[in-house]
Amino acid sequence: MNTEALAWFKSSHSSGEGGECVEVAVGQGIVHVRDSKDPDGPRLGFTSAGWADFVGFAAGL
Image (tube, rainbow, N blue to C red; front, side, top):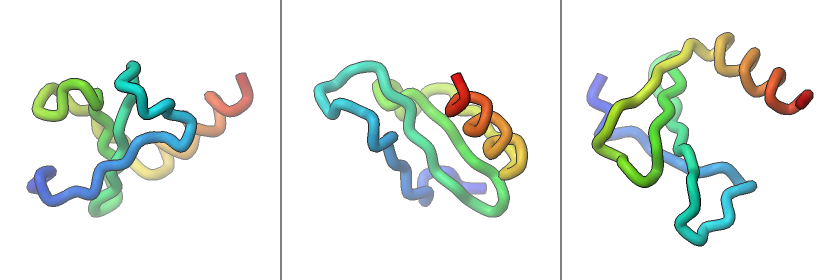
């Protein structure tokens, strides 16, 4: 998949002041994650179910 066509967004909890943030984009059943400070750098891809499990776990911390 061409990840350049994805609509990336930051968490609503991001300060917007250039701190350490991740960006997320959803495309064709895969949730893509990247470092907002290095948009051309490495990216992770999760299944929708895997991402939901991670978010549920993180929200419980």
